[in-house]
Image (cartoon, rainbow, N blue to C red; front, side):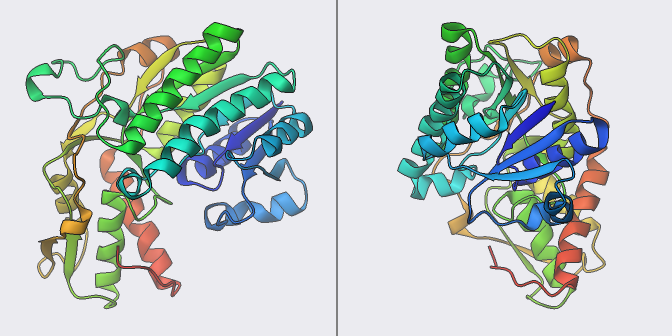
Length: 338
């Protein structure tokens, strides 16, 4: 069996590659651009050089020809479409790039599958951000379920609405085995530093090393988030495509620990020996023009279908995230203070 992961060099893609290599006998093909940073998959490069079940192939969502060639060469049995412009805050500054990469890029990918005459099981990764800014009085008591209306609160979220609908369209119109997920906040080692909990952890690690003053810069601390560990997330994605996959279905997936962004900050600070010295300062540049601030999922549909449950406690996720940044700081890496 061959699995193709778009966005393999990202946090989720790299953890998914690790999971598949450890838990299956599949060959794992990662689609990446020539300029994609390889930090998250550096531990796989020796295996790739030896062609030991790991292969990195060039492709770009903005180049249809590269995607067609990729499909014809790899001929995957499973496709995990994770590649995207994935930073909500960045999407306010680069809306056209975000919409083009995420919507048209997904369409190009699915068209490439059709042109190559393939019939893989395909996971299209949308986002919980499609639900956007739900007023408290309209939020279901059990959390956001699959049939809640979309109210995207950023160009990124709008692009993921398009991604979500494209996945379902290709399943219904062409009989392709496409399923869509709306994963809620998921994090852990390798999380990009543009996301709130990861920039908190990075700043704390830099403070501990004496690289910056004991000040953590933050955005909106009042948003409510439900956290899952990235390693639980990729296990869910594997189960999605292997446990009775139903073409055209769509699922909310998320963790079980809910708190405010401010609570997450306090948790991370509490793990630091510098906790009594760290100050918190709001940075206006970290605030979104509009925020999806009630991200609490109802995941009963996916759990009932697959039997998946999150296993990694929130505390371990945050400890591992902080240790990830401590290790990078210890190695002498340089970072932007973002």
